[in-house]
Length: 205
Image (cartoon, rainbow, N blue to C red):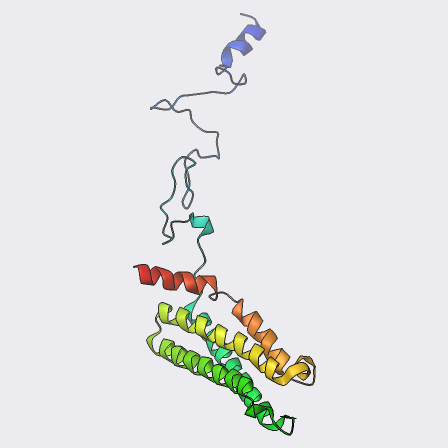
C-alpha cells in the first residue's frame, strides 16, 4: 500500500463534515460536542426550547418584570418627601401671613387659605402613612406611604410656589429648590408605577 493510501485510510470523514474529524455518535442519536464546549445548558441558563417559569405576578417575561426596590430605601425616600411637604407648608403659611396685597395679608383671601389647608392635609396624611410603614415594615405599607409622600411633596411645592407668586422662581427663594428635589426623589426606585403595581397585586390577591 502506498503512503498516500495509508494516510487516506487513517482518517475517517464524517458525513457532511471536514476530513480528519471524528463524528462519533453518542447513545441516543446525538452527536458529541467539540472539546471544551457543552451542548447542554449550564447552571443559570435556559434552553432555547424550554421557557423558564415566570415568577412575576403580572405574567410578564422575567426579563421585563419590574425590579423590586429595597423597602428600606423606599421608606427613607418617603421620609425625605415628607420633610419637603412639611417645609413648603410652613413656608407658604409664613409668606401668606407677611405678604400684603390691597392693604391686607394675602392669607386673608379664600383661595390662599384653601391652598395652605390642602397642603397641610396632604402632609399630615403622608406623615401618618410614613410613621405606620416604619412600624409595620410591610412592603405594601411602604409603597402606600411612598405614593402619599411623593404627592404631598410635589403638589405641596407647586402650591407653595403659587402662594409666593413670581418671587418663588427666583434664587432668593428656596421654594424652587424644594420643588426640584421633590421631582428628583419621586423618580427614584420604588416610586410611581412600581409602588402602584405592588398595591394593585396586593389588592387582587
